[in-house]
Image 1: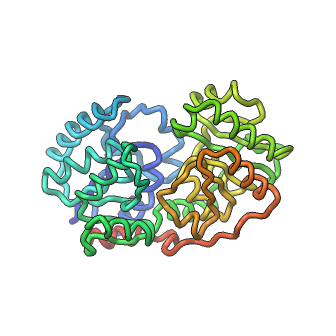
Image 2: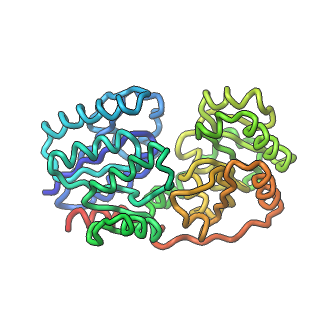
Length: 352
């Protein structure tokens, strides 16, 4: 029996591991435990999250909660070591590029266990970013590199990963999107607004929020080019407070549950975001998407999908929005293996 630990460090990780859990539960010869680095009462894990994703809540909460990344890394290493001492484990799956993810990866390899990295081979090529360091460490330690696309495969190969370690399983986010396609729930914030007649705006990057002068220019570009088109912005309270003095034209709402946010983005005229995950979802739904960044971890969303990068340039944002509102956006297609079967591939590889 293959015993797997699925390690998660933050809310977005659950969207990516839910399909793997469903696939494991349907497969003989493999069992799992779900471990979360944070607290059981973590406010980012809304009560509906696990019901929405149709997955169980974590079996184990490590209870680590701190802002300093170095302190967090040390505490997760200590708590996860205790977990592995008490639970027989053959393979640990870690997700994405958080400090907690790197901590779990280091402990896994120090104990001589097999390490699998979900969404491997993603790079910004900016070593000043803490997450870039995390990615390099995790990929360097991993025995199995589960990549989302050809570009990620190429990066892993170029950095010296052995070919037998690299598996292009596809984008695991697509598994969740396909599974939940008929389960989306129309949010209350759309009352009186027609599907396809609104824009969605999300923002979270600290660098964008810190430059208030430039942020004001970008917000002005959004509201001016949108005109009478509603711009719905599901935001965390701290971000709403940050934006309030800069604009009054956004329809700001509290962060939405997973199924409601899925409906909101999949029925929009277009999306403006700084989130790579949201841009990937837009490509899946064939929704025009503007990303407020100069790079993306999944270049397929730009080369093949509906995504366009404008950096932090208000002028480029304005030009892109003008084309989006006018219906002059490029037509996208789904990249290879973004077919909703990534979890099945992953489980079969774990059992091989």
